[in-house]
Length: 575
Image (tube, rainbow, N blue to C red; front, side, top):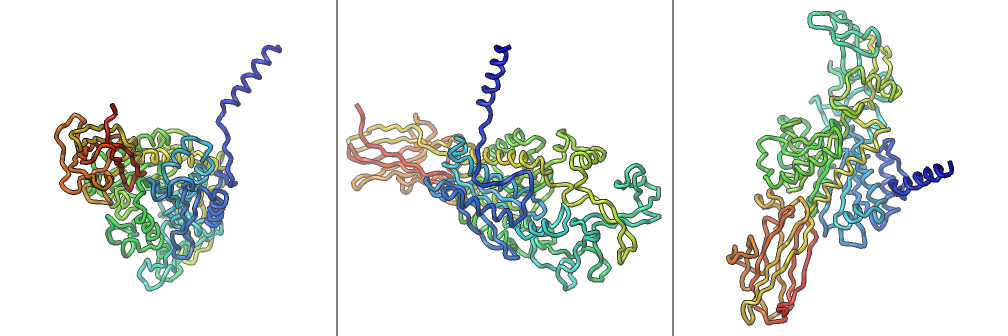
């Protein structure tokens, strides 16, 4: 018995030694709940205070109602400036009702800060890459969603005053919370010619009658009354632009793309973010979080823009997307226009097609995860979920209300927490898996180094220097799109020499055995690399230099999307 006890004790101790280490954070934040805008704002300030050597908090500007649009820059102060490194831009909550998007970005900040100096792979990644995090791009509508009656689907746009129905009045007829439950639910009225009946076993459920049959109820839509006396209900709410239709690039006016706004970046929120992105050409990766559906989406948003995505660029997208399908169960890697719907003026398509940034939208949460199986859950199973796992918190019982237009109506049903947003007890896993996806994306940002260098003496003062620049990551320093459309500054490979020495000629080669070069006609010592360095590839270049033996030379490679590198060499043969 004592021997058995010893074995069990050793197993327990061995197991604890192998267990995943707990990495504490200096900021107390839980991811089994949601935070309103004010709480997120306070947490961001806490992160900046507790991690001053890692986090810089800046305001990109103000929303329509004067709230700050906060940016957290994660970059170790002891290393390179964030502008001198490739950067990953991550934002969320561009649609006010898609609230868990902000939690995922907040989780990213939390996990990165507590991991620096503790988790080797993430520490190394932060030393090499900067992170730009905007948890809430639409602060006014997030604040509205938490503080005022809302539904799972609204408010989506920003809170800029707007006359939706063209009657000269502004925001005068939005939904009304008739039963006071804090959500905008559904209204039903008795109707002998209706198309619905209530389920005989569960009167929370309305079922449509077969064609040719008469029901007892008519669905009137969302709660609301005719506030402006025009005979319509809920036709002029408080939102204006759909901020994810308000970006340059493939922007179209409202009559083509609803919610586009009067012109690109007419929303103060989108303009603030766009100005930051445009001012930071080191951004090579872009992630925008939305909900719902369990998707990792890339552009284009329209079929006629397929030619913006070259084959080599798609190789990077495909590897990131396919890896995401492994990291995120029940998520699918899809193309926006082909697999979802057409989008003009979208944020990630602007980043990808106008700026040459590898950009994804993740539609957070999928119904498949309710019961951890593909195909989601049927209505019967969903009621098991609502009753047994959610304990009835997402349903408001129907109550009878006197309606000024329709008389007595039933009001109630599924509330604003009932769909789209991740259930709170599953939120942390959803955050972590999406965080891991963006970390894999960030790992693919360009990482360059000098490869082998070959030095040959061709004459008393004539030297042949052959050098390779290698990119160890999947994303090229310049996407194919950037080279084709002249986006951004070309990469540069140059030789610095002292007075009395010069580069006679230079050119690119395919192999070190080549005797012919693709000659650079002008400034052979300062070579512009329009095509950059390919992902998991290299460029080879040969310089012919006129210099005395013993001359010191410096090779330097610079890129907007990679850390600049240099290498010293002496022009002499080692015997």
